[in-house]
Image (cartoon, rainbow, N blue to C red):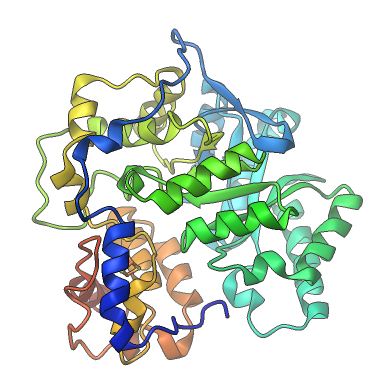
Length: 405
Ligand code: SF4
């Protein structure tokens, strides 16, 4: 099921695309809706903390997505600034990212003051395996995380990159995680998702096993009623929501025609505040790998009020739609007769072109099944105009070919 192509036929595709347009909020949308949210906590310059659902963990509303960082100094400076939650993954930088975070925190001697979130069992590792192999791989992965992070327990372990209900219902995975919890090697479990997020969040809530969802969530989704509803429902049911992709790829917009009068700082802060003001989101993990972005992002933790410029940016519907953020809805899959995995190629493109994180881009590309990979694309451009989010799919795939084919 997972990773399989949508069962939409090309005939059904037109209808599905219209549905996508509506659910994506691109038909008859009020531009002011993006700012129509409840008032955030007043901070008076103090860091705003929230509780991560039923885990009971209290965290600043801004944490560190460490995946793109390779300087332990940034991790240590973040801790000194007030960051208490560091997000990484077993496969980020082929394990070196966990090592870097573990070394940085070990040198400070503050392991007991911080929360580690890490991710294991990627889609490729979950593919075509027996229940026995699932448990074996899970146990091996956790031993690797513990070793690299220099710790004897992991606070939150996510199943990495969940795109549908199947991994959430995988009994062998739950049995393995429960055993690891009993052994004290992990404290809380979760799923991470950047595709079909509303469905994954709702399945996690109804399944009842996992405590946390790490989800893609940003202002381009303000009108996506399914997503907004899923986040609200999770918050109400005690599932901790951690937000990633908070800045929709950042101010380095992927569409060259998108020009903006707003500074990078306004764009980044406005986007992060939009996420952090949602009280169903316990914390967010903007990825920063330099000191300027660290200070900029963490400043939001103690000031959730929008400036006039930030409000102006967020309420500009034209910019919001021109960004062409791929929200991994997978509606485009049916447009390609050659089986190309468009959503994951769009994610690869974002990591390379916007994040300039070539490790992550390469890892994402490697995760794509060989029968759905870049070489399958014959450059027919049939997919060009089908995305409700105005993602220029064909151009981005051609750019990927220049880089990777
Ligand atoms: S390119 Fe992304 S946002 Fe557009 S239809 Fe495909 S998965 Fe959805």
